Length: 222
Image (tube, rainbow, N blue to C red; front, side):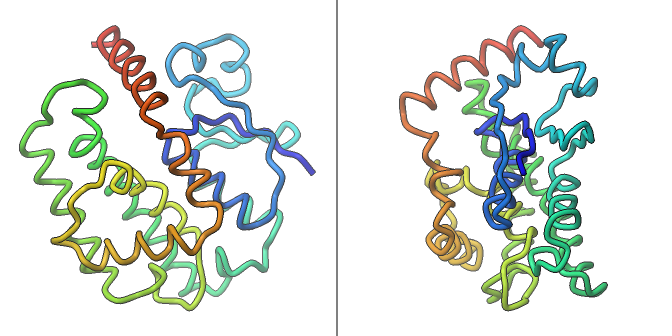
């Protein structure tokens, strides 16, 4: 079984899908796509007219949006996996975290990644919004080992870990959020594939090249 995944390895959304496939032992044919010009190519637009990543092509069934792809992989190929539990209340807790993570990830783009990608300081209100979301994450997480409070990993953890990997790579100060700091440090060591998927592509050379290309692309779009 091999499924095509159009992906960009620095996208948290793509990395969440990659970790889900690893956890479910699903073989993916990963096709790396530059999120600048390549997503507008005629070849890719035939697959996904919405030109966003990640995009899954399961023998002609095309699905976009990372959380939908993660849920589909569990439902279609491992329906009994605890990674996305079938019991309604347990699943609802996973879904809640998936929705919360979207807010956290979007605010981190402005509060953490903005300066890296544009070279400009982010607006103070965006920095404050991210810090407030991070503190809420810390409060909701509490002393849970896994986000939902269950005794096992879920796709909620995988999407949260992908979204917050930037905090580890930038050595973001988490002293005000001790639960988040413990959670990230513990699970990043616990999952054998975490570093390979989330950290290995952030060498100084690769990061400098990515930042340079991103800044040029953003300036063209502005």
